[in-house]
Image (cartoon, rainbow, N blue to C red; front, top):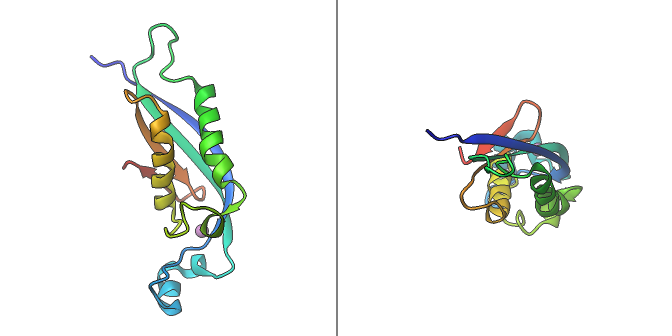
Length: 137
Ligand code: NI
């Protein structure tokens, strides 16, 4: 019987974005994205929860050291995106619409190589208290 445990670390960052498909005209963008397409951008206080799943190490009792996980998220994600305009200031979203969905996928891909291969990982991103996404689903 597996003794897998899920551990979670929450960090946060603030960033601006605009949801926009450059292949569409303004009317279509406005219809699909509403206020999120306004040209002068808007901000969110993003909450990022990283879930790591595995069996506790017999020596430490930890699935993963939460301090190391926190430092990893800070160094790789928060430093990169905090107080940035995601569309204008980041390579990741220069050609990718910075929806919560796409941000979660990007964050997962950034962090996954840094998490031990034997551990499962999932990213939950809150764009608002009521809107949040999980990747992988
Ligand atoms: Ni938004």
